[in-house]
Image 1: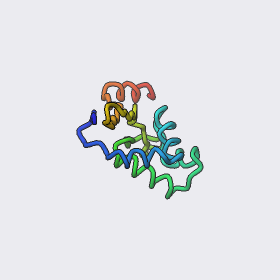
Image 2: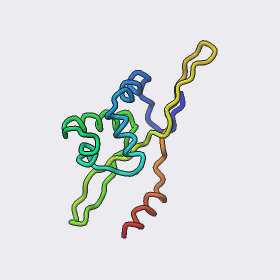
Image 3: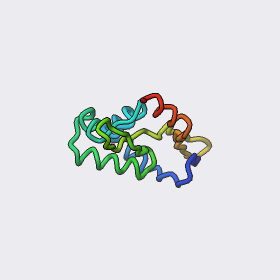
Image 4: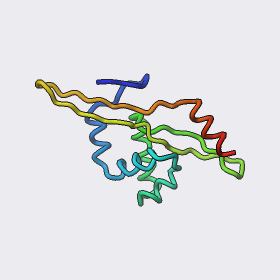
Length: 119
């Protein structure tokens, strides 16, 4: 098992159970393209607020989603979510099952460039 982050990977059962949920896959797909708030994801995925937060919490706990803060024009801010999952691979070879979760790294320089571009 390969781990690109400092926290331990969730077990295989947890990852497979998460990815077995079509709404989780929709959340990961949407957030791989950019940050979305829970309300935006709920609308996009057709889920209630409680359902979306339940899935967001499980994905964040598994370190497959990252929370970020997005400033709003009114001076307030909101929490948005970005996928950290880059690749999930299961390999069965020579009588052994192995799996790898590769995560996107958070590059501070890229994040600052992205934020600067919004001004």
